[in-house]
Length: 496
Image (cartoon, rainbow, N blue to C red; front, top):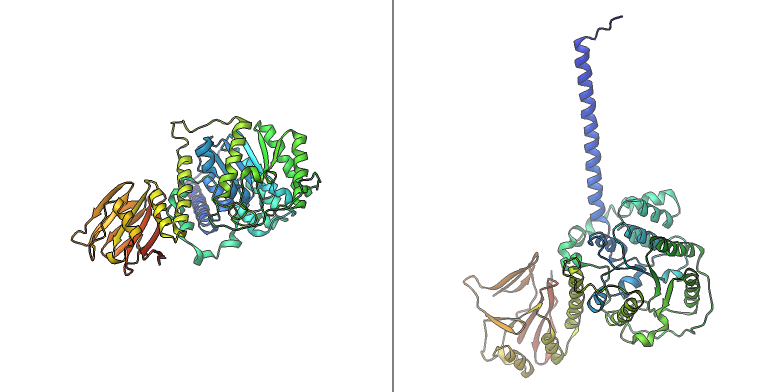
């Protein structure tokens, strides 16, 4: 039997096929646009907390297989372990991935995720989670510990371990319910973090220290051997971490950083964790046993009851770094010229200058202020002008004289730029502009109207005396702005 297909039927079939293909392409395009919008929404609307999400975001940006020491754990990691000091003193390229009150299940999935991108010579697990008693975290803690991870099975498993039901898994995977109303809260750090703090963003290694000081009482705790079991869920994942590292052939060190809240109960939990570590042949060090060796001053070295500040973390990291080099034979990378580790030195400079800026901004004594200016590195520029020479103190005259600036005119319209030991006298052009430059994407200008950084005036011209603006070129920011008059340092807080 011969089948006859009419020409019209063929044409109709082709048209239907084309129509179906067009509809399919529309669906694919819609889904693609939806995914792009959701991805943009996630990037913009999730709050940019340093712990957890921002740390993981910058971790993904590290050169592949460039991290020799990976430090994992709670906030004690990214506040106490100074990655800049580990590099500058020991040549250790390290990175800290952690989140506030991070339980061991999040540490476990952080480590598994990190191993997709890095092959460290050593993993350091900070053990504060031994002393935390909960099976599921509160919402904010969960978000900090999972939102920075890329969407994959490690993230989904981390969420599953952190919440109690399927709805929770969906909520924390999308985070739409938590943050879809943040329109009024968005800042430049949400949309363009590389502009808000570019040097930190480009060279971040997870660490970000406390600059304030919080005097505490030295913990009184008998260093006995009483053992108090940690919660079952924490122990389960603690063992998983040890077993996973051993399966991967990567040495693991478990440590407890100095903690002002250390007490007999926490001591008991850490003793229990030590016994488990010894069972597996893994090193466990409780640095609360070594306050004197570290040289901690409990009046000056803490930022709060549980965390070290910029003074304490440098002392602690020095002791930790010495131990890591001696015990694990880590390679000193400072002589490497490949460029792979350049960002670790930049990270060190950022952290040190951040402290220098803080100390300068807190100084009220004139002699001390002058000394701090003398000690600044060549990464700084100092802009000076004299609004009225009669109010210049003798101490300030001597300082200015070192840079060939004479305070003798009743009114001096010039501006002076000091960089290192070189002083440049600035003279205004026909438009009243003395000087301008770009620091990355940031704009600095010195004009008859004042000194302006990113469209914000950072000096106060109506004060009498010596007006000083200190520019941190490396960190691309104003370090301090003051007027010195009659032995006093008046600090000007710029208004945006």
